[in-house]
Length: 163
Figure 1 (cartoon, rainbow, N blue to C red):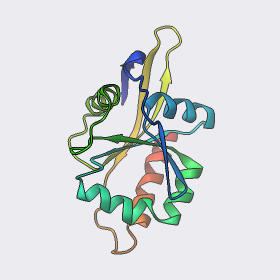
Figure 2: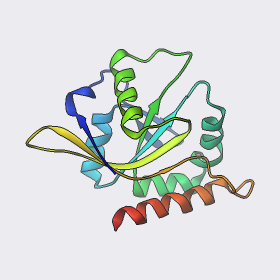
Figure 3: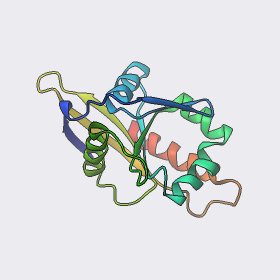
């Protein structure tokens, strides 16, 4: 799936990275895109409701907090959080950025993860999003081993994106 965005639509001035459990999560698209280009890795876009989504918290606790996920993420992707909080206010620029990405990827529920590449066309300055695949909470996972199922699914998305 290829999507196109206008480059100027994603300019934010708020805090652009957070470090959680040794992982760097970008919140500004342009910073995540630059990091991905420099590292030659795809973006791991985590659509979340940080202050209200129970399944998002469960995914963070049972997958993202595990050492296996941390090692995999550091080696394979650039982490990017796209937040839709209900209690805290995002800057207008951040809200616009996140809504634009939600529409581009047609996200309808949380948590949703899209793994994608983002490349700016030098001629038009439009951003081409090449979606490799999506993930959610790992259904059917053995209790206590949710990260194993999640990582199997994530590795499959990356492998399919290489073809």
